[in-house]
Length: 629
Image (cartoon, rainbow, N blue to C red; front, side, top):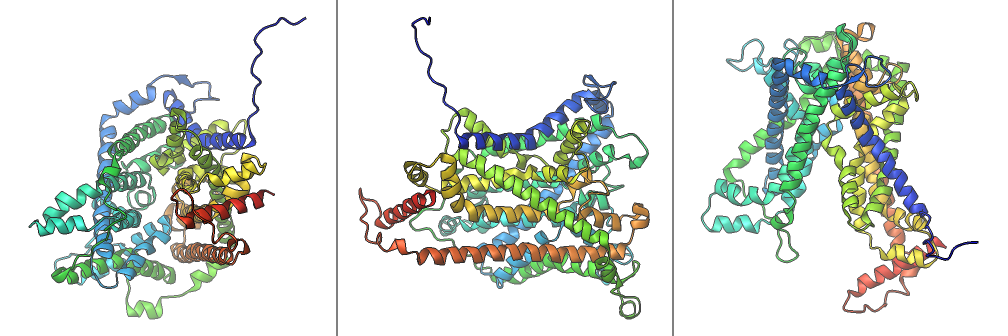
């Protein structure tokens, strides 16, 4: 016999969409949170691995060791700060100048300049580093050969292994990224403010200092922080150039600590402590950026009325500016590719001359590479890893972004949004090492270390790129479309799959292509995770140009392979973008010719709304119901 009393409210079962969002959020946590947690535990529980080792114990021994090596500690901080900070400043100055010339001036061939500046972005980072190494070779480097023609330059005009050369080379490799971010910032700035300052008698330097830079400050700060984090996670230039002068640079220091090539046991605990120190630094930098840009809308200058971007007449500065732009394009696009080509057609390093070109050149290296089965196997692995990681990141990011965008902005939702966006604050070096530790800890139970699956998971850590794009695209889709599907009896997951998903597809595909290209170019992550049986093409190229690779060392084949790889990345990237553009054009033509637009073309707009907007929403609702049915 039951006692009378208050009946409990029936529990509501989670919807299928909520389950999908929970799964996506869990995957994002495993991609971003779990490796960092393992790294933190390793830093405080060592000295080798935190679990599965009898000698492991909790403590701060690794940090004490770090502090006892004071000279090494401050040396690493100083060298890394000089390397990353110096290259970031130089990259920003060059990127700002190029973006200003192409957007805000009347410089000739501006479109051609913008295209040529983007060319280095297509070249894989390890290939760019290899090209600069060939270009600056003391004896056979084409740039050093050209500089020797000038008076007072000496026998070796540029020492490629000096610390200053490392900073300058790193800055050249990073210019395209801040350039691409600065172009829309400068494009969207109203030039009437600068004209007002000029009319008031202000000089151009004063206008730049008092008007332009304060208006651009939030955007420039964001570009600075992201460029700094990008440089901190770069391993290619320090690895090829800095074995002596750059041995204290953080990325190379971390790679050396876990590498057994030095004859010592790997020092995972000490490396984890180093990684934690620099993770705190990048987190503080990212927090400063978020705080400084929280009121960025106050500096907005684009309005719907009277907005017009202005262009500045260069006058007498046109010729000097074009000379500097030409030198930049020579250093970043033309000379590196020529150095690679010369290195590929000569069996050993030799200075360029017409005699050498006629008697010592051969294209046999290209045939050898194309006939090498290991090359095609490494290329296949690269495609599988890049495609799998891009698919994983895009799918979970799109589902999670949709759920966050359609949720009430509670503190938990805001925290989840910030966490899903956090991978931009994690340098690739720290991410690769954290993933390495995670797979080492899990390997006794889940043997993933060194496998293609491990590389796919590690490459997916850039999920924040897909998340931010999907989140912004979801906010542009009005909720009435999902409501129309729900009214027709569909579940929220069905509405997302049949209605919202097709509308998000152009953004999803564009982001997938971007992440696929990033995956094909990746070098830092496989440097920590790959083994000879699973190494992608970027690591195989490094083995070809690394003298320590014994029988694999073949610099001419490495240069030929780098050129072939670059052409393949270019063809795949632009081919996918061309297919995406053709698909978008086809969908647009199909939408214009759709028969259900005619009956609604005269639909009235109510409540003062734009009639065309009402028609568009009505058509979208009808299509949403049709898709559900």
